[in-house]
Image (cartoon, rainbow, N blue to C red; front, side, top):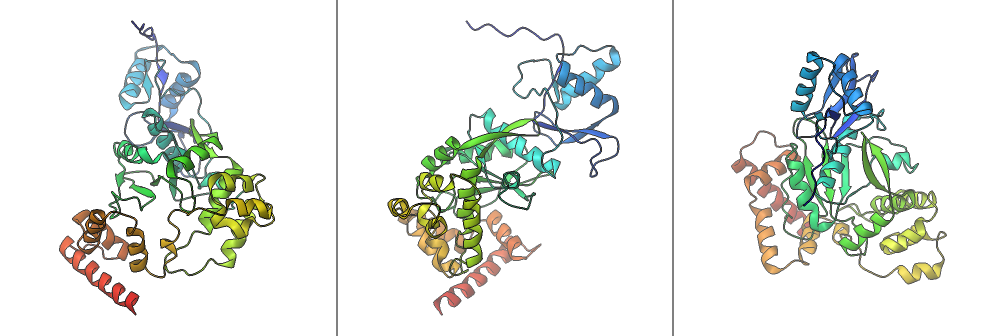
Length: 382
């Protein structure tokens, strides 16, 4: 029989993430701590005596109240999901740091995603974003979303877990196929988009093998009090280079500027060439790796079929989508094609929003989308 932990005689600080924002320009002058509750909710600021008490929970917990007023505050904090009498609580925090990112709310979104995944035993690695800036691989610091990569067998689980916090999965006509590499989560009252990756286009490894390789080449940083796993700089350089040269439908051949940028990324991180081999990225980065790797090494690793590459290089969406569908079974092709011709309500309203048709009814949105599709089909035929 497993012994239960001893009952706590005081309170400790818990949160999904927290930041010291005292003096931060975008918050009120009296705001001291930005905290995201351990249970689904929105972030809020602690000020004055509340902030001072919570800091004591962080550094001196378990804390017993000095009087009735503090007891009432601790009860209120418990109800808000930022204090607990369980010293072993999975969301316990013992420190609060200044923001590492220029946007504290963005940093909280990273912390939340990492903690949510960990609570369900879902390993994940955060790619792209501010980590590239901190590693010296790009000048731009901020990103508009969070990119998280998890095992392909668990990406639906992670999407479901984030929905409890107010994110909703963007309708996707490719859902149920092997084609789309991300699930986009749309925020509710707060936060930013979260893109859940099951693979990175351009690698030749099987999705699960590629993820395992990146985990082996990763390290941890702390965002909003939570450990977040990111690729090491030499691994991240390869992923960033692959993303830089990724073909876009209708964009034509790889530009010289994209190739130059990708080559500079690889050259900036010692060991990137070896990791390009490890990740199966040589076929798409062969010309950018020239000079970093011996010709015989490149020749040895240039084989394999990069995922999501050939169909993205097609000159229009009609040809691209058809080529992508050829790898699916006949029933799946029929089901997906019908979604494109006459999509369900949530999907067609999302499509209308992307096309700039705001405020239209589902029926009108379907017909307008159908007309756009016919025009695109005619253009492709010409």
